[in-house]
Image (cartoon, rainbow over all chains, first blue to last red; front, side, top):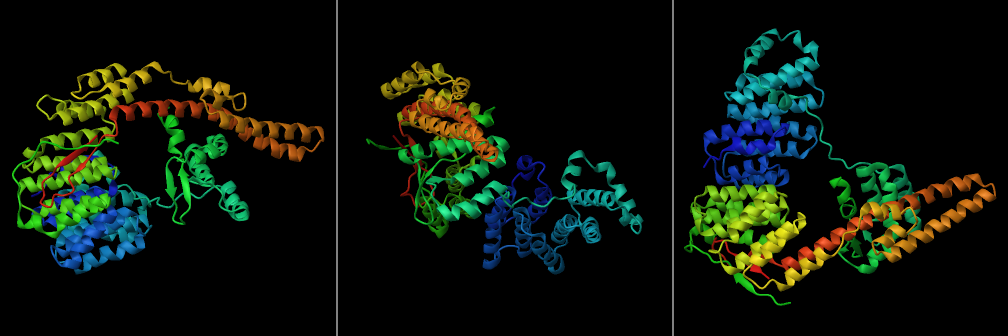
Length: 283
Length: 289
């Protein structure tokens, strides 16, 4: 059964990674879907990256279903998860090189182009977009490739020199472009998956004071972590918040509500930031 | 605690098929029992895609929705409910579907939709236990939305004896919230903000810390030790601002605790979970009081 992907995609608006995945769904639907493939595409749409990759690996290992499509979905999930572009690009290159299905190669090529653009390799990005643009029979992918090249030319004007034919081909599709296409095709930004670095006060405490006095905090998160979270969320307001936490600490540990067993076996008592800033969010 | 297990009135024909006896469904159930909700939801979805029986598909999607709901992924839970409906095999599970829809809407903070589904579940043609569940849930939801009159009305219409719940509601209605603004103003006097909300020990702790650091400031200033004065002043500002913040925060916590206590008393530790003994894919919810 082919599900109405377009309707469900509304929840994924402005998610660049999925714009082309959804394009891919049209392609998959044309080929009919096995249960695993539908499950993998569903997990991809829901941005359950890890589960999606696991599902693809499982299908590839069991040898059931269309291999090239699982490879592509797995690579798209890795991309969505924020994996290092240097590790994902070879996956797309492999799909393009070994694939017998032109449409899968076109999707992989488009995604490869975006990875190259993200890592500031405009020439390689242009080649990949051009391949996708010239190979695909899917209208959405065609428009995405064209618009991506148009924006890439805007970023790197020197690329225009030897590509006049390509530019004129792109211009033929411009009448079909729409506003959301520009958002989908804008230059990709790297995923911000790294947690924010603690400020110098916390770093000083953790490196110089905590080792001397030992891990004394009986609350979870610890007071330094609480201060870090509060600082990231509320800036200077974190100062009164940590003072309040230090005053309340004996009471919270005495009440023994919400015990948390730490990996070391130590028992701490939960006092998360959410319990003390819920009213700030409301305001 | 007095607990009774009540089965929701169900259930269509038992549909045992080759797929149902297969490992996928059992694996999904075991994962659910182990509270590995994410993995369980995926396995139920896999089962739904493997089987060709619409009723089994619907049951598997409902299980999946339940698992997603438990893992806090209400968006996915809602989507699984849509899929269960799309299979065309969901007729035996309308009550379960409405219940999960209500819970999903509630976790999405979509009170309008939640009230709609709880109203459906509170219809007279539903089993008494289902009606009670829906009325109590709706009452707690109204209370959280600040509508005490609507909450009382729901409890009065419940088919069960709601004396305890109504008493809890009256206690809440007759009580008084603490004003966070007043708490903050009291906090200008070190520790008094905490006392305003009944946190006596916290207030004294804050008062002692402020007193010590103010004494330190006065002492260092009188000794012309301006470096030490600056360092102590920095910490004193921290404790003093903590007193004001603590006054506001303790009032907010006081109000939240009061509301939670009343809501919990109204809901009386109600919960629901799928029947764990089923091996073939039918969906069955147990409501627990």
